[in-house]
Length: 459
Image 1 (cartoon, rainbow, N blue to C red):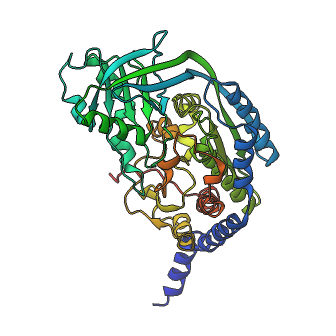
Image 2: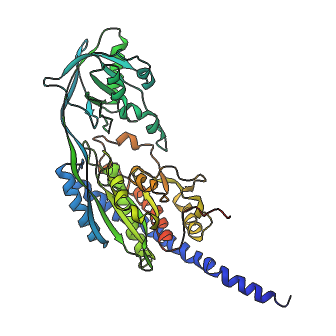
Image 3: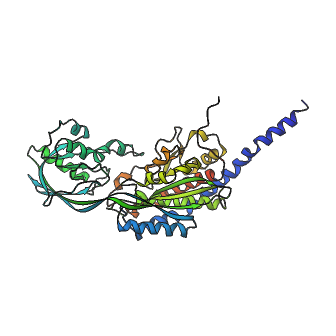
Protein backbone atom coordinates (compact mmCIF):
# COMPACT_ATOMS: atom_id res chain seq x y z
CA UNK A 1 0.00 0.00 0.00
CA UNK A 2 2.89 2.35 0.72
CA UNK A 3 3.85 2.16 -3.01
CA UNK A 4 0.39 3.29 -4.19
CA UNK A 5 1.20 7.03 -4.47
CA UNK A 6 4.22 6.21 -6.62
CA UNK A 7 2.13 3.99 -8.91
CA UNK A 8 -0.59 6.60 -9.21
CA UNK A 9 1.98 9.32 -9.86
CA UNK A 10 3.64 7.22 -12.57
CA UNK A 11 0.28 6.52 -14.21
CA UNK A 12 -0.49 10.22 -14.16
CA UNK A 13 2.78 10.96 -15.90
CA UNK A 14 1.99 8.43 -18.63
CA UNK A 15 -1.58 9.66 -19.16
CA UNK A 16 -0.73 13.31 -18.61
CA UNK A 17 0.04 14.44 -22.17
CA UNK A 18 -3.19 13.00 -23.59
CA UNK A 19 -5.30 14.34 -20.72
CA UNK A 20 -3.64 17.74 -20.84
CA UNK A 21 -4.06 17.83 -24.60
CA UNK A 22 -7.85 17.68 -24.54
CA UNK A 23 -8.66 21.08 -22.98
CA UNK A 24 -6.33 22.99 -25.30
CA UNK A 25 -7.65 21.16 -28.36
CA UNK A 26 -11.23 21.69 -27.24
CA UNK A 27 -10.62 25.37 -26.56
CA UNK A 28 -8.88 25.84 -29.90
CA UNK A 29 -11.60 24.02 -31.81
CA UNK A 30 -14.28 26.10 -30.11
CA UNK A 31 -12.38 29.32 -30.83
CA UNK A 32 -11.96 28.44 -34.52
CA UNK A 33 -15.65 27.48 -34.69
CA UNK A 34 -16.88 30.66 -33.06
CA UNK A 35 -14.69 32.94 -35.14
CA UNK A 36 -15.88 31.24 -38.32
CA UNK A 37 -19.50 32.03 -37.54
CA UNK A 38 -18.85 35.76 -37.82
CA UNK A 39 -15.99 35.71 -40.33
CA UNK A 40 -16.74 36.82 -43.91
CA UNK A 41 -13.74 35.24 -45.68
CA UNK A 42 -15.76 32.46 -47.34
CA UNK A 43 -18.43 34.85 -48.58
CA UNK A 44 -15.80 37.24 -49.88
CA UNK A 45 -14.04 34.42 -51.74
CA UNK A 46 -17.14 33.04 -53.47
CA UNK A 47 -18.42 36.53 -54.24
CA UNK A 48 -15.11 37.41 -55.84
CA UNK A 49 -14.94 34.19 -57.87
CA UNK A 50 -18.48 34.41 -59.23
CA UNK A 51 -18.38 38.16 -59.90
CA UNK A 52 -14.92 38.46 -61.38
CA UNK A 53 -14.65 35.13 -63.22
CA UNK A 54 -18.15 33.64 -63.61
CA UNK A 55 -18.66 30.22 -65.25
CA UNK A 56 -15.43 28.22 -65.56
CA UNK A 57 -15.58 25.21 -67.90
CA UNK A 58 -12.33 23.29 -68.17
CA UNK A 59 -10.39 24.28 -71.28
CA UNK A 60 -11.98 27.73 -71.48
CA UNK A 61 -10.34 31.18 -71.24
CA UNK A 62 -12.39 31.72 -68.08
CA UNK A 63 -10.66 28.76 -66.47
CA UNK A 64 -7.31 30.36 -67.20
CA UNK A 65 -8.52 33.49 -65.42
CA UNK A 66 -9.76 31.32 -62.56
CA UNK A 67 -6.27 29.81 -62.22
CA UNK A 68 -4.74 33.26 -61.85
CA UNK A 69 -7.53 34.30 -59.48
CA UNK A 70 -6.85 31.25 -57.32
CA UNK A 71 -3.16 32.02 -57.05
CA UNK A 72 -3.81 35.67 -56.21
CA UNK A 73 -6.51 34.79 -53.66
CA UNK A 74 -4.37 32.28 -51.77
CA UNK A 75 -1.43 34.68 -51.67
CA UNK A 76 -3.62 37.55 -50.50
CA UNK A 77 -4.96 35.41 -47.66
CA UNK A 78 -1.47 34.55 -46.46
CA UNK A 79 -1.03 31.00 -47.77
CA UNK A 80 2.49 29.77 -48.46
CA UNK A 81 4.01 27.66 -51.22
CA UNK A 82 1.25 28.84 -53.55
CA UNK A 83 1.71 27.18 -56.91
CA UNK A 84 0.00 25.66 -59.93
CA UNK A 85 0.21 21.98 -60.86
CA UNK A 86 -0.39 21.44 -64.58
CA UNK A 87 -2.02 18.45 -66.23
CA UNK A 88 -3.94 17.71 -69.41
CA UNK A 89 -7.46 16.39 -69.69
CA UNK A 90 -10.31 15.93 -72.11
CA UNK A 91 -12.41 19.09 -72.48
CA UNK A 92 -15.82 19.22 -74.15
CA UNK A 93 -17.14 22.64 -75.17
CA UNK A 94 -20.71 23.66 -75.95
CA UNK A 95 -21.78 25.37 -79.16
CA UNK A 96 -25.22 26.67 -80.28
CA UNK A 97 -28.09 24.36 -79.31
CA UNK A 98 -31.81 24.21 -80.01
CA UNK A 99 -34.65 21.70 -79.95
CA UNK A 100 -38.28 21.89 -80.93
CA UNK A 101 -41.29 19.68 -81.44
CA UNK A 102 -42.27 19.84 -85.11
CA UNK A 103 -45.30 17.48 -84.96
CA UNK A 104 -48.03 17.11 -83.95
CA UNK A 105 -47.86 20.29 -81.80
CA UNK A 106 -45.05 22.71 -82.70
CA UNK A 107 -43.27 23.95 -79.58
CA UNK A 108 -39.74 24.88 -78.63
CA UNK A 109 -37.97 22.81 -75.98
CA UNK A 110 -35.47 23.96 -73.35
CA UNK A 111 -32.30 21.80 -73.52
CA UNK A 112 -28.65 21.81 -72.55
CA UNK A 113 -26.19 19.50 -74.22
CA UNK A 114 -24.74 16.83 -71.93
CA UNK A 115 -20.95 16.97 -71.69
CA UNK A 116 -19.47 14.51 -74.17
CA UNK A 117 -22.31 14.88 -76.66
CA UNK A 118 -21.61 14.53 -80.36
CA UNK A 119 -22.84 17.38 -82.56
CA UNK A 120 -25.74 16.93 -84.93
CA UNK A 121 -25.04 16.90 -88.66
CA UNK A 122 -25.32 20.23 -90.47
CA UNK A 123 -28.98 21.13 -90.59
CA UNK A 124 -29.75 19.07 -87.50
CA UNK A 125 -31.74 15.90 -86.92
CA UNK A 126 -35.49 15.49 -87.25
CA UNK A 127 -36.82 12.17 -86.02
CA UNK A 128 -39.74 10.59 -84.14
CA UNK A 129 -39.27 10.19 -80.41
CA UNK A 130 -39.88 7.21 -78.15
CA UNK A 131 -40.63 8.17 -74.54
CA UNK A 132 -39.59 5.95 -71.63
CA UNK A 133 -40.82 6.96 -68.19
CA UNK A 134 -38.05 4.96 -66.52
CA UNK A 135 -34.46 4.21 -67.40
CA UNK A 136 -35.14 0.51 -66.96
CA UNK A 137 -37.78 0.70 -69.68
CA UNK A 138 -35.07 1.88 -72.08
CA UNK A 139 -32.79 -0.96 -71.03
CA UNK A 140 -35.58 -3.45 -71.63
CA UNK A 141 -35.61 -2.61 -75.37
CA UNK A 142 -33.85 -5.04 -77.69
CA UNK A 143 -31.02 -4.06 -80.00
CA UNK A 144 -32.42 -2.33 -83.07
CA UNK A 145 -35.69 -1.32 -81.42
CA UNK A 146 -34.85 2.42 -81.62
CA UNK A 147 -33.36 2.57 -85.09
CA UNK A 148 -33.90 6.03 -86.56
CA UNK A 149 -35.57 7.30 -83.36
CA UNK A 150 -34.75 9.83 -80.66
CA UNK A 151 -34.86 8.09 -77.29
CA UNK A 152 -36.32 10.14 -74.44
CA UNK A 153 -36.09 9.11 -70.76
CA UNK A 154 -38.29 11.12 -68.39
CA UNK A 155 -37.68 9.48 -65.02
CA UNK A 156 -37.74 12.07 -62.21
CA UNK A 157 -35.34 12.25 -59.29
CA UNK A 158 -36.61 12.78 -55.76
CA UNK A 159 -35.69 15.46 -53.26
CA UNK A 160 -33.51 14.08 -50.45
CA UNK A 161 -31.41 15.63 -47.73
CA UNK A 162 -28.38 13.54 -48.54
CA UNK A 163 -28.63 13.77 -52.34
CA UNK A 164 -28.79 10.00 -52.66
CA UNK A 165 -31.36 10.09 -55.46
CA UNK A 166 -28.75 11.70 -57.72
CA UNK A 167 -26.60 8.61 -57.58
CA UNK A 168 -29.54 6.33 -58.34
CA UNK A 169 -31.25 8.30 -61.13
CA UNK A 170 -28.05 9.86 -62.45
CA UNK A 171 -27.24 6.86 -64.62
CA UNK A 172 -29.81 8.06 -67.16
CA UNK A 173 -27.62 11.10 -67.86
CA UNK A 174 -24.26 9.43 -67.43
CA UNK A 175 -24.85 6.32 -69.55
CA UNK A 176 -28.24 6.71 -71.21
CA UNK A 177 -26.91 7.77 -74.60
CA UNK A 178 -24.67 4.70 -74.75
CA UNK A 179 -27.65 2.42 -74.17
CA UNK A 180 -29.82 4.33 -76.62
CA UNK A 181 -27.14 4.15 -79.32
CA UNK A 182 -26.82 0.37 -78.80
CA UNK A 183 -30.48 0.11 -79.72
CA UNK A 184 -30.13 2.25 -82.85
CA UNK A 185 -31.20 5.69 -81.59
CA UNK A 186 -29.96 8.72 -83.53
CA UNK A 187 -30.11 11.03 -80.49
CA UNK A 188 -30.88 10.92 -76.79
CA UNK A 189 -32.82 13.27 -74.51
CA UNK A 190 -33.03 12.82 -70.73
CA UNK A 191 -35.01 14.63 -68.09
CA UNK A 192 -32.62 16.87 -66.15
CA UNK A 193 -31.25 15.50 -62.89
CA UNK A 194 -33.09 18.19 -61.02
CA UNK A 195 -35.65 18.69 -58.28
CA UNK A 196 -36.86 22.06 -59.53
CA UNK A 197 -40.03 22.95 -61.41
CA UNK A 198 -38.62 25.62 -63.72
CA UNK A 199 -37.94 25.52 -67.43
CA UNK A 200 -34.20 25.62 -66.83
CA UNK A 201 -32.40 22.46 -67.98
CA UNK A 202 -29.46 21.06 -65.99
CA UNK A 203 -26.34 19.86 -67.76
CA UNK A 204 -23.58 17.50 -66.60
CA UNK A 205 -21.21 14.90 -67.94
CA UNK A 206 -22.20 11.82 -69.91
CA UNK A 207 -20.36 8.95 -71.54
CA UNK A 208 -19.71 9.77 -75.21
CA UNK A 209 -21.84 7.54 -77.41
CA UNK A 210 -21.35 8.96 -80.90
CA UNK A 211 -24.82 10.53 -80.92
CA UNK A 212 -26.15 13.91 -79.75
CA UNK A 213 -27.37 13.88 -76.14
CA UNK A 214 -29.08 16.63 -74.18
CA UNK A 215 -30.86 17.29 -70.92
CA UNK A 216 -34.47 18.47 -71.05
CA UNK A 217 -35.91 20.84 -68.49
CA UNK A 218 -38.17 18.96 -66.10
CA UNK A 219 -41.27 20.67 -67.46
CA UNK A 220 -40.35 19.88 -71.07
CA UNK A 221 -39.81 16.24 -70.16
CA UNK A 222 -43.36 16.24 -68.79
CA UNK A 223 -44.55 18.01 -71.94
CA UNK A 224 -43.15 15.27 -74.17
CA UNK A 225 -44.75 12.63 -71.94
CA UNK A 226 -48.15 14.28 -72.39
CA UNK A 227 -47.74 14.64 -76.13
CA UNK A 228 -46.71 11.01 -76.53
CA UNK A 229 -49.68 10.02 -74.39
CA UNK A 230 -52.08 11.47 -76.99
CA UNK A 231 -51.33 8.51 -79.23
CA UNK A 232 -50.00 10.49 -82.19
CA UNK A 233 -46.39 10.26 -83.41
CA UNK A 234 -44.23 13.04 -81.98
CA UNK A 235 -41.26 14.35 -83.96
CA UNK A 236 -38.46 16.57 -82.67
CA UNK A 237 -35.90 18.65 -84.54
CA UNK A 238 -32.53 18.90 -82.78
CA UNK A 239 -29.54 21.08 -83.64
CA UNK A 240 -26.42 20.89 -81.48
CA UNK A 241 -22.83 21.99 -81.98
CA UNK A 242 -19.87 21.09 -79.79
CA UNK A 243 -16.14 20.46 -79.88
CA UNK A 244 -13.66 18.36 -77.95
CA UNK A 245 -10.06 19.05 -77.01
CA UNK A 246 -8.57 15.69 -75.98
CA UNK A 247 -5.52 17.31 -74.38
CA UNK A 248 -6.68 20.55 -72.84
CA UNK A 249 -4.33 22.23 -70.37
CA UNK A 250 -5.71 22.32 -66.84
CA UNK A 251 -4.44 23.20 -63.37
CA UNK A 252 -4.77 22.37 -59.71
CA UNK A 253 -4.07 25.50 -57.66
CA UNK A 254 -2.40 24.78 -54.31
CA UNK A 255 -1.58 26.78 -51.18
CA UNK A 256 -0.40 25.78 -47.71
CA UNK A 257 -0.23 26.86 -44.12
CA UNK A 258 3.05 25.21 -43.22
CA UNK A 259 3.30 23.24 -40.01
CA UNK A 260 5.74 24.40 -37.34
CA UNK A 261 6.63 21.01 -35.87
CA UNK A 262 5.86 18.39 -38.53
CA UNK A 263 5.52 20.24 -41.84
CA UNK A 264 5.83 17.01 -43.83
CA UNK A 265 2.61 15.69 -42.26
CA UNK A 266 -0.12 17.14 -44.44
CA UNK A 267 -3.88 17.58 -44.25
CA UNK A 268 -5.33 17.98 -47.76
CA UNK A 269 -8.68 19.72 -48.27
CA UNK A 270 -10.31 21.63 -51.08
CA UNK A 271 -13.08 22.17 -53.59
CA UNK A 272 -13.17 22.27 -57.37
CA UNK A 273 -12.47 25.48 -59.20
CA UNK A 274 -14.03 24.53 -62.53
CA UNK A 275 -17.77 24.64 -63.22
CA UNK A 276 -20.33 24.06 -65.93
CA UNK A 277 -21.27 27.00 -68.11
CA UNK A 278 -24.97 27.91 -67.61
CA UNK A 279 -24.63 29.61 -64.21
CA UNK A 280 -21.69 31.16 -62.39
CA UNK A 281 -20.66 28.07 -60.43
CA UNK A 282 -21.52 29.56 -57.05
CA UNK A 283 -23.05 26.52 -55.37
CA UNK A 284 -21.09 23.99 -57.47
CA UNK A 285 -18.40 24.50 -56.41
CA UNK A 286 -17.42 28.07 -55.65
CA UNK A 287 -18.90 27.48 -52.22
CA UNK A 288 -16.63 24.50 -51.61
CA UNK A 289 -13.53 26.42 -52.65
CA UNK A 290 -14.55 29.26 -50.32
CA UNK A 291 -15.41 26.98 -47.38
CA UNK A 292 -12.10 25.15 -47.41
CA UNK A 293 -9.99 28.24 -48.04
CA UNK A 294 -11.63 30.11 -45.18
CA UNK A 295 -11.58 27.12 -42.81
CA UNK A 296 -7.87 26.49 -43.40
CA UNK A 297 -7.06 30.15 -42.83
CA UNK A 298 -9.05 30.30 -39.59
CA UNK A 299 -7.69 27.00 -38.28
CA UNK A 300 -4.16 28.15 -38.97
CA UNK A 301 -4.68 31.50 -37.28
CA UNK A 302 -6.27 29.94 -34.20
CA UNK A 303 -3.00 28.18 -33.35
CA UNK A 304 -0.61 30.89 -34.44
CA UNK A 305 0.85 28.25 -36.72
CA UNK A 306 -0.36 24.63 -36.69
CA UNK A 307 1.89 21.68 -35.85
CA UNK A 308 1.07 20.01 -39.17
CA UNK A 309 0.67 21.49 -42.63
CA UNK A 310 -2.80 22.35 -43.90
CA UNK A 311 -2.93 22.24 -47.70
CA UNK A 312 -5.79 23.69 -49.74
CA UNK A 313 -6.28 22.47 -53.31
CA UNK A 314 -8.53 24.17 -55.83
CA UNK A 315 -9.02 21.23 -58.17
CA UNK A 316 -9.18 22.25 -61.82
CA UNK A 317 -11.27 19.66 -63.66
CA UNK A 318 -13.84 17.87 -61.55
CA UNK A 319 -16.87 18.27 -63.80
CA UNK A 320 -15.20 16.59 -66.77
CA UNK A 321 -12.82 14.55 -64.62
CA UNK A 322 -9.05 14.55 -64.50
CA UNK A 323 -8.02 16.75 -61.58
CA UNK A 324 -8.27 14.17 -58.80
CA UNK A 325 -6.33 11.54 -60.73
CA UNK A 326 -3.68 14.08 -61.70
CA UNK A 327 -3.29 15.22 -58.10
CA UNK A 328 -2.98 11.66 -56.79
CA UNK A 329 -0.39 10.78 -59.45
CA UNK A 330 1.67 13.86 -58.62
CA UNK A 331 1.60 13.17 -54.86
CA UNK A 332 1.67 9.39 -54.62
CA UNK A 333 5.12 9.39 -53.04
CA UNK A 334 3.86 11.42 -50.07
CA UNK A 335 0.62 9.48 -49.63
CA UNK A 336 1.79 7.92 -46.36
CA UNK A 337 2.40 11.42 -45.00
CA UNK A 338 -1.07 12.71 -45.87
CA UNK A 339 -2.84 12.51 -42.54
CA UNK A 340 -6.37 12.99 -43.84
CA UNK A 341 -8.14 14.28 -46.96
CA UNK A 342 -11.47 16.03 -47.35
CA UNK A 343 -13.50 17.78 -50.00
CA UNK A 344 -16.44 20.17 -49.97
CA UNK A 345 -18.58 19.65 -53.08
CA UNK A 346 -22.18 19.56 -51.91
CA UNK A 347 -23.11 23.22 -52.17
CA UNK A 348 -23.51 25.57 -49.25
CA UNK A 349 -26.30 23.91 -47.24
CA UNK A 350 -25.63 23.30 -43.56
CA UNK A 351 -23.50 20.32 -42.56
CA UNK A 352 -25.87 18.02 -40.70
CA UNK A 353 -23.65 15.00 -40.06
CA UNK A 354 -19.97 14.17 -40.06
CA UNK A 355 -18.25 10.84 -40.65
CA UNK A 356 -14.62 10.39 -39.66
CA UNK A 357 -12.36 7.32 -39.76
CA UNK A 358 -13.23 5.09 -36.80
CA UNK A 359 -9.58 4.33 -36.03
CA UNK A 360 -9.27 7.77 -34.40
CA UNK A 361 -12.57 7.82 -32.51
CA UNK A 362 -11.02 7.66 -29.04
CA UNK A 363 -8.25 10.17 -29.66
CA UNK A 364 -8.47 13.47 -27.71
CA UNK A 365 -8.50 15.38 -31.00
CA UNK A 366 -11.69 13.68 -32.09
CA UNK A 367 -13.19 14.10 -28.63
CA UNK A 368 -12.49 17.83 -28.93
CA UNK A 369 -13.94 17.97 -32.43
CA UNK A 370 -17.12 16.21 -31.43
CA UNK A 371 -17.51 18.59 -28.48
CA UNK A 372 -17.48 21.53 -30.92
CA UNK A 373 -20.39 20.23 -33.00
CA UNK A 374 -23.59 20.53 -30.89
CA UNK A 375 -23.87 24.35 -31.18
CA UNK A 376 -23.62 23.89 -34.96
CA UNK A 377 -26.42 21.30 -34.97
CA UNK A 378 -24.18 18.79 -36.69
CA UNK A 379 -24.27 15.19 -35.52
CA UNK A 380 -21.65 12.46 -35.58
CA UNK A 381 -22.37 9.60 -37.96
CA UNK A 382 -21.58 6.28 -36.32
CA UNK A 383 -20.73 4.63 -39.65
CA UNK A 384 -17.34 5.13 -41.35
CA UNK A 385 -17.09 7.65 -44.20
CA UNK A 386 -18.06 6.11 -47.53
CA UNK A 387 -17.45 8.73 -50.21
CA UNK A 388 -15.27 11.75 -49.59
CA UNK A 389 -15.66 13.28 -53.06
CA UNK A 390 -14.51 12.67 -56.61
CA UNK A 391 -11.39 14.83 -56.40
CA UNK A 392 -9.99 12.91 -53.45
CA UNK A 393 -10.92 9.52 -54.91
CA UNK A 394 -7.38 9.15 -56.24
CA UNK A 395 -5.96 9.75 -52.78
CA UNK A 396 -8.46 7.31 -51.32
CA UNK A 397 -7.13 4.76 -53.80
CA UNK A 398 -3.69 5.34 -52.27
CA UNK A 399 -5.14 4.42 -48.86
CA UNK A 400 -5.20 8.00 -47.60
CA UNK A 401 -7.83 8.33 -44.83
CA UNK A 402 -10.71 10.66 -45.58
CA UNK A 403 -13.71 12.36 -44.00
CA UNK A 404 -17.23 12.83 -45.29
CA UNK A 405 -19.11 15.88 -44.03
CA UNK A 406 -22.71 15.68 -45.23
CA UNK A 407 -24.38 18.91 -46.27
CA UNK A 408 -28.11 19.49 -46.51
CA UNK A 409 -28.73 18.94 -50.22
CA UNK A 410 -32.50 19.39 -50.11
CA UNK A 411 -32.30 22.35 -52.51
CA UNK A 412 -28.97 21.60 -54.13
CA UNK A 413 -30.43 19.88 -57.18
CA UNK A 414 -32.79 22.77 -57.82
CA UNK A 415 -29.64 24.67 -58.79
CA UNK A 416 -26.96 22.14 -59.73
CA UNK A 417 -25.50 22.52 -63.26
CA UNK A 418 -28.15 25.08 -64.25
CA UNK A 419 -28.41 28.79 -64.98
CA UNK A 420 -29.77 29.18 -61.45
CA UNK A 421 -26.41 28.30 -59.87
CA UNK A 422 -25.64 31.88 -58.85
CA UNK A 423 -24.40 33.72 -55.77
CA UNK A 424 -27.83 34.84 -54.55
CA UNK A 425 -28.70 31.20 -53.80
CA UNK A 426 -26.03 31.01 -51.07
CA UNK A 427 -27.18 31.73 -47.51
CA UNK A 428 -24.25 33.46 -45.72
CA UNK A 429 -25.20 31.91 -42.35
CA UNK A 430 -25.26 28.39 -43.81
CA UNK A 431 -21.95 29.04 -45.56
CA UNK A 432 -20.44 30.16 -42.25
CA UNK A 433 -21.72 27.04 -40.48
CA UNK A 434 -19.82 24.91 -43.02
CA UNK A 435 -16.66 26.90 -42.39
CA UNK A 436 -17.13 26.49 -38.63
CA UNK A 437 -17.36 22.69 -38.84
CA UNK A 438 -14.33 22.41 -41.09
CA UNK A 439 -12.30 24.95 -39.12
CA UNK A 440 -12.87 23.02 -35.88
CA UNK A 441 -11.84 19.78 -37.57
CA UNK A 442 -8.76 21.22 -39.24
CA UNK A 443 -7.67 22.78 -35.97
CA UNK A 444 -7.69 19.51 -34.02
CA UNK A 445 -6.21 17.46 -36.87
CA UNK A 446 -3.39 19.94 -37.46
CA UNK A 447 -2.54 20.54 -33.80
CA UNK A 448 -2.43 16.98 -32.51
CA UNK A 449 -0.82 13.63 -33.22
CA UNK A 450 -4.10 12.00 -34.25
CA UNK A 451 -3.63 9.08 -36.65
CA UNK A 452 -6.63 8.17 -38.77
CA UNK A 453 -5.13 5.00 -40.24
CA UNK A 454 -6.25 1.64 -38.85
CA UNK A 455 -3.81 0.15 -36.38
CA UNK A 456 -2.11 -3.16 -37.27
CA UNK A 457 -3.69 -6.17 -35.64
CA UNK A 458 -1.80 -7.50 -32.65
CA UNK A 459 0.16 -10.74 -33.41
